[in-house]
Length: 432
Image (cartoon, rainbow, N blue to C red):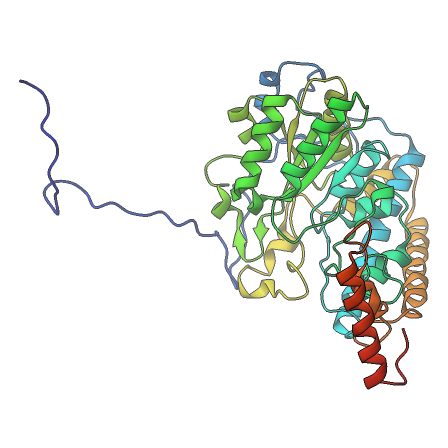
């Protein structure tokens, strides 16, 4: 019989040896940075499909970059949400408040008042723009750099500080790592330190909302490094199959701890382009443009509410500081990256826009910065009355047995009483 014989094992011959490709960042510590190869289209040049369009109409936008604020600091194009000056000033203030909160909590960690903190410097537009675009009762499934969502929804700053300090007033009773908030009444799902759990959780919640005939949608946030996790694909599969009313956000801030975005696949295509393989809508946006973030999130939310299914949004931004207080970015990336980042700083961009349209001034901005710093300082001092990490002002020992069962089983009641009695016996001055 004719045909091709099975290939036999070869160790040489005319075949080139196989090579493994390991992505490497372009710049390491000490390198000069050149972003001239980064394609940044002009603001306003991207078309805006109707919210109820076929998913395929969005696919050119998966490899483009939706922008509203241009180099002239003015809003342009069909994605301009045309927000009034009052809304823009409120958005600016929440971003500034978020940054002031981050700065003070970072210092608190360095002072030993808490064990850990994660800043969102340079990414404030992602969380705040999204919060302004969503309904207050939509459920958000955040990662650990979306504190701006909680602040924008009016959650008390003092309660956030209590959680960070794990003190006696901490609503979570010291059971969560600092910055991993949980606020059901504010539509803020519990933050998890495990990567990408937000996607299947958000999709499941959105499916339940649809099953009940509710009007609320879900929105989830992960970093670009988390797209390499299996939960990312599980979430997208269920969202696509069941047309879940959910907005799935990928915050591409270029770095996942010390691994650059290429390790998660950024060298091949954009993260938004992964929507194409699942047949759902996708958008890639300038994540440092608060108006673009607002417009894209509102578009995706309206689409979900119109029963047109999920949208995958990539927020192209930059993590200006370390991954956390445990990280030193100078060990793995060039110090010039932050200063050379071509999309700028989101707070400064919105400030310049308001100034350009005659609705803001340098004096007003300086006053606002002082006010938000004072607001954070007051909240921090109030929280410190209930204690800081390691100073003994923690929740009563008996609370370790609470909030697990609706009714505490007899054997746990017995253990709790025994533990409390033993501690009081050994430490007579100790009180619950």
